[in-house]
Amino acid sequence: DIQMTQSPSSLSASVGDRVTITCRASQTISNFLNWHQQKPGEAPKLLIYAASNLQSGVPSRFSGSGSGTDFTLTISSLQPDDFATYYCQQSYGAPYTFGQGTKLEIK
Amino acid sequence: QITLKESGPTLVKPTQTLTLTCTFSGFSLSTSGVGVGWIRQPPGKALEWLALIYWDADKRYSPSLESRLTITKDTSRNQVVLIMTNMDPVDTGTYYCAHRGGQGNYWYFDIWGRGSLVTVSS
Image (cartoon, rainbow over all chains, first blue to last red; front, side, top):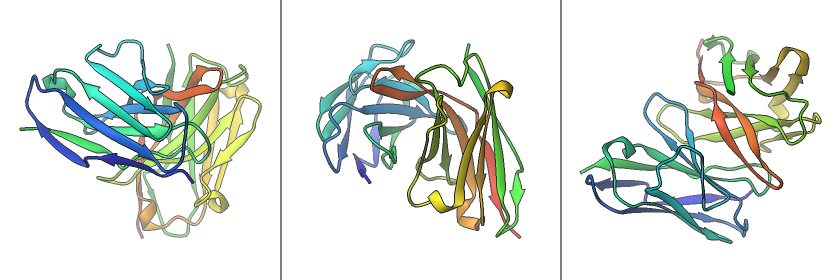
């Protein structure tokens, strides 16, 4: 199985901050990496697919990068609606594992 | 517009079998490239991928749960069913179904159901 490790596990930041979340795969996955956002009591929402492609309707302050084993999700200027938990997920090969999540909290 | 909705029991007893149904609209599970997956989330914990069924009835399972899982589709009824046997309290959580979208080799869960909370308790 491909293990996905996110860092940090939690993060406190303020509105307007630039934030970066990292996801590392235990083996190379090319750019088969997706990012999801989940708010409490809600289903996850796709933000980024294929490492760097913004899903339709997602604000441009979100961006993704990386290839191989190391990936990042960046929020350029945090908005109040962005405080949530973020998960990476690899679509390279089954089982299609998720990271453990990064909880983004208000400072 | 694609929508998915999970349905099934909210409470099951240990050792019982769980049957969850995902009823969807806005796409056909006979269209090439399309799939429906199941993902679960224990309370306060991370997402865990369980199973995926493709338009051609090919299936993939989480190796750690494969012996307990069965995923099937009924294309005419726009439904996907997940069966999990020998339920245990550690299986308590919210179970989501999701649409597998994408192009070519790049795919992703782009539309999710709202989830179905399942509690395993005697």
